[in-house]
Amino acid sequence: SMTNTSSANSTRFVKIKSAQCRSLLPEPVQIEVLKTRGLAQLNLTGLPGACLRDSRDKIKALASQWIHWGPFDRLLIHLLPADQTKDGAHLEFPILVGCLLALAPPEISTRIERKLEGYCLIGALSLEGNLQHTALSRALEMAAPDETLGPSRFQSVADFWRQLTDEGELN
Image (tube, rainbow, N blue to C red; front, side, top):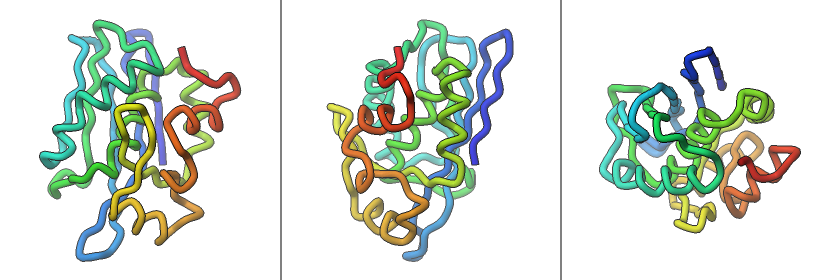
């Protein structure tokens, strides 16, 4: 499920579960987010497709609305399995959640990680932070509705944070 480690040098590591379809069958995708010190940027590795590469600026802008993204917070996002291309807007929401947890204070991210254990996150994002269905997200949610968190359960990122945190917005 998810792991987050913290140390004095502000390096953080988070894992998020998601999925994609291969040959019409759901297949797990793991999203790893490593926060290190460097120039504030978001890098994607692990064979992200063109759609996900295009989502980087949107994900960074949305994350910055919810949590402080410092000038020296570098996020490296790695998508597993590393030898298969991962693409589709349905991976935007889990990538954003990984970014938020990597940037959040440990006491908040640890509590949220415990709540998310065992869930698969799925969903596309609008520029306003609303969760949207794609054909793939709809199919994946229907395949395992009790283990999936996405647009069928949450209208927006704001709705998601409100339901998972005691204090609402993260500042």
